[in-house]
Image 1 (cartoon, rainbow, N blue to C red):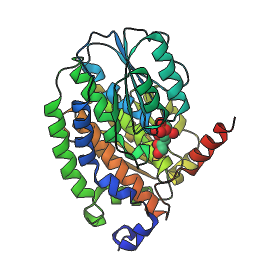
Image 2 (image 1 turned 120 degrees about the vertical axis):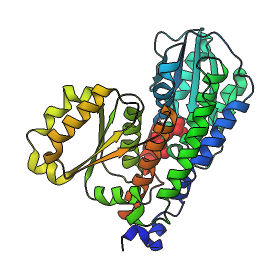
Image 3 (image 1 turned 180 degrees about the vertical axis):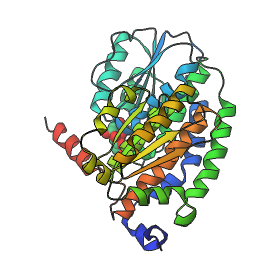
Image 4 (image 1 turned 90 degrees about the vertical axis):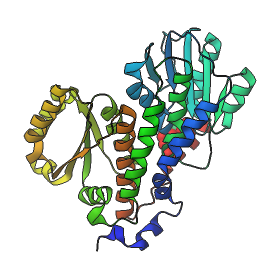
Length: 353
Ligand code: F6R
């Protein structure tokens, strides 16, 4: 029997991180509703959109950019740092996202956006961001607390999509959301802890990746962000190094780097390639050729395909497979997927000065 089929293994997950992963479909539904119901969001003319956020919160901006960016009337970018891009102005829509509400980079850029007179909406559980939003009369979408930010992607990202739709900056995506919820529900049941490894894609992949350094490749757009998300989940849940890149860009640099350390990489690196129906046909060709070229240089090469019909469904499906896989991998290692002690320590040290 695979260890993941033995209920004893779940003792390593005292906060039930896996339970939160299993409930992603419901969280996505709630996040969408929170965004649709929020007060103070009116259709408006804005010249661009800038999302502020770091780590598990900032990735919500990447989701907006990848899923809706190509369909939006105005450009969207994500600011991950202490300073706003110079093009942010009073004509911008600024979406400040911080799960804790206390992330100093996000607070710094929020303050700068207030000074510029930009139109702002905050998404947070509370903290200093909620206080400043109240002081400045900025609309706030308050999301449920008690989770790790990276386990709250549905609460963090879906309100951003709803805001952009409600402001008339993209065509309506209600049908895509319904489609995504259906797919997520089906796929979540298929990867649930109760489903044995023999039938469970995420448990199988975690078993393949155990003891290896995961390299996650995705194609530009939704799979690029999904690949980054997978890498971060391997870091934060399984506490292992991982790296990611995207097609077609990796064909112009990273592919050369597989040349020299073959004995090392074929032993220690395991590749995962995220595929989706919206890939550019030339990108599909590139993936096919590239996987053939590097197969002998990695311990395993696993394609992960989504059949999601919309970009939203395809993206969330890929994310869900990655979240399950990283959590199962943590458990296979006997590692608690929840805490991120190094991040907490770093923030404590910074708070002293
Ligand atoms: C922890 C995590 C981190 C935080 C980041 C920013 O699970 O994912 O990447 O998201 O340190 O903090 P918040 O999200 O509170 O603004």
